[in-house]
Length: 339
Image (cartoon, rainbow, N blue to C red; front, side):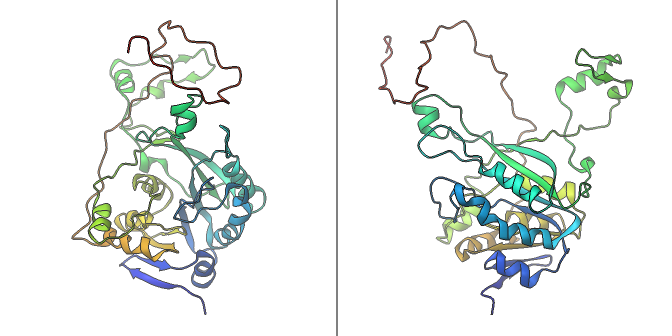
């Protein structure tokens, strides 16, 4: 007998407590899921409480999940994976595990890469500290890859559902008009470019801060002495893909459910859903997401985040020569003469 159970049910969905590799084969029919929206444990150097796998073993660990994902997804459905990068132990170079995962899913399981997205977290702290803050030889790692895959080259999708406000420059262009011409880059900009469609098509860079220091979920966990899931993605991330890739009534599954953010968004947007999670401690806290007395509408952050152009502080300042060893040896801090 399979060792899992339904932990909680709502009008539209279920939380499963158990192993995804037991729940999916037992409870989910072939080609029954419209969207798998998930953030699996990342392949990190250090072991985390939520059960990540070493990056060198990650692809092999993921293969049984990939087999089940391909089985349960509809032919025109989508698989969206939020996955962070990793550093090679002891050196300031990156692991390729998340790229190897993508290649494996496409070459061995027949998935098609519909598009790659990049989630930029503007609130991300400078990490890894050793390379960024101490030796000053790398910049902070603030972007996750988000792979959008499908069993078909033609998954269901509609970008009109996720439009964003025009930029100030675009509003100025619409106000003053634009002369159709061939740009130096070779792009032929027609007069249709100046048509006001009310909003713009978003890029594949998603600027979403991951800040919820006083959210109802965290307050609930604190009040009930529960462990909050340490690797939650913000609700705006799954909502972007749920709105673009599914209709109300469609079936959305998160096989690495965590605190069930995907389920909460699906419930709010009228999609059927299922979240599967191995840890009962994390599911206990996730109940707050479906308590009408506790839950709150999602916070809407500022319309945009300012990206500073490279060179904004390039003012002719002279620096010491670059270290020929690339920061291999940690150097002692030197006090500023004026300090």
